[in-house]
Length: 97
Image (tube, rainbow, N blue to C red; front, side):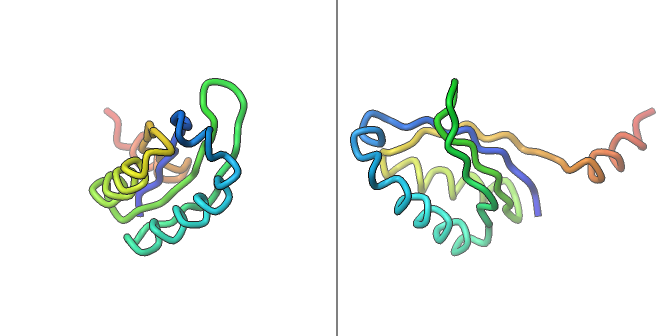
């Protein structure tokens, strides 16, 4: 499984319907699981991003499909970072010449 950090901002529609956000988060978890991924954590944040999520998916294509499925609903816009755990990065770094 690949790891992802998803930086999320509400759209105008998303803020207007902010009270539905907990229900939308639960629906996003279900959508990710149906696609073969998992949303491990969803953090509501202050600053440049409104929400930060930690996710896993079997591959980049699956993560892109999840993000596009969520984005087309009109409540959020995402920026996704692919991430490696310390252990995974250590294996990669050990191969640097």
